[in-house]
Length: 102
Image 1 (cartoon, rainbow, N blue to C red):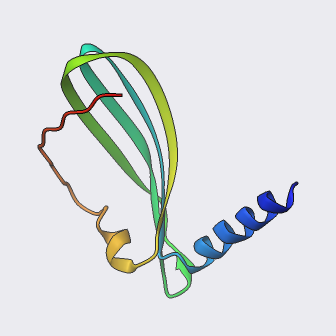
Image 2: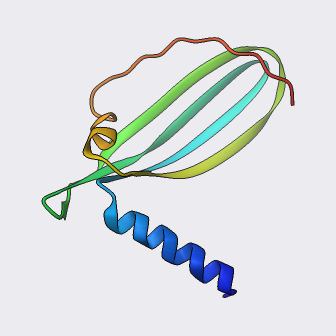
Image 3: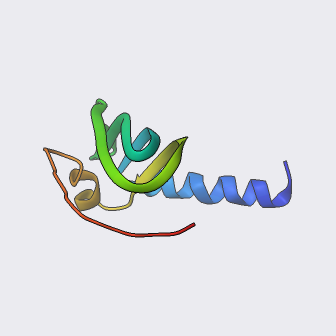
């Protein structure tokens, strides 16, 4: 490992050691004019120094516009506060619009 890799690993390890929660999610997006996305994963929280049992999460979305392609993304979210970790509890629905060019 390079010096930069070691420092990055130590930084992430320190964040996880202080975290109040973690989420692991994998999202697949694809579309041709109409698009859709689906993601699944797990959330764990820490209370009194102990990690909880994992809870399943799902993310669904759709879109319309000039687009084509497919991609898959994996992510780990590190929650540094209990409030951030509990934001994943319950059901949340969001509706919005955006425009972009890339």
